[in-house]
Each structure stands twice: as structure tokens, then as C-alpha cells.
Length: 125
Image 1: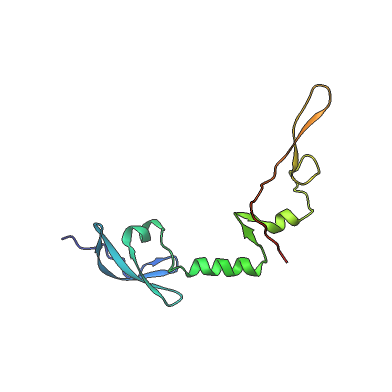
Image 2: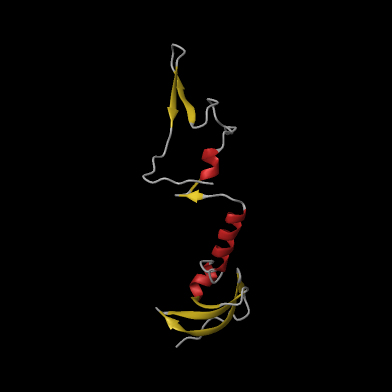
């Protein structure tokens, strides 16, 4: 049986490799200590490629930060950007959500409007 690559003490994001704890699926699994105090086990390949960088506390910290900035995400859309009356600088029509598609030879313009219809209601207070 081959020996595991020694990554003891190496940092991977918020994780520090502590010791190998066994093999799973043909690869070594390492116990890692997170900066927040938790410990996790991760395959060495995930640590080396950057797939595992924390015990999950990073995702929680990002969620808290988003809550502090009062941005409400629904389906990947920031609700405040929809509620805002400000028109983006790259908008060609001057109307939020409407842009010029093309101009016709007779001087008329074709405008397009895009809307996402959601089957449920969301209210921001």
C-alpha cells in the first residue's frame, strides 16, 4: 500500500490538514481543522484542487454578509435591482427593462421588453 502525500500543516482556504484518516474510493481522506474550530474529513484530491476550502462556515458567513447588505435574492435575482427606478448606464431606451432591438429603414424602432414571470409572490418590507 502506498503512503499518502504528506500535506500535514498545509492550508487550503480556511482548512489546515491535520492527518490522514484512511482511504475511500482509492484516495486518501484527510482530517482538517477549520479556522472556526470545526474539524472535517475531505479527500486529498478535493483539497488540492480547491474544491473544499472550509467546513461550511464560509457559506454561512457569506449568507450573513448578504443579509447585512439587505439584498434579497430570489431565484438568482436581486429584488432591490428590480424595485429600483434607476436605469442602467448601458440601457439604450431610457426605460428600465426595455431596449432597442433594431431601427427600421423608415425610421421606426423595434423595442424589446423582458420580464420573468414567477408563479409565487415575494414581498420586501
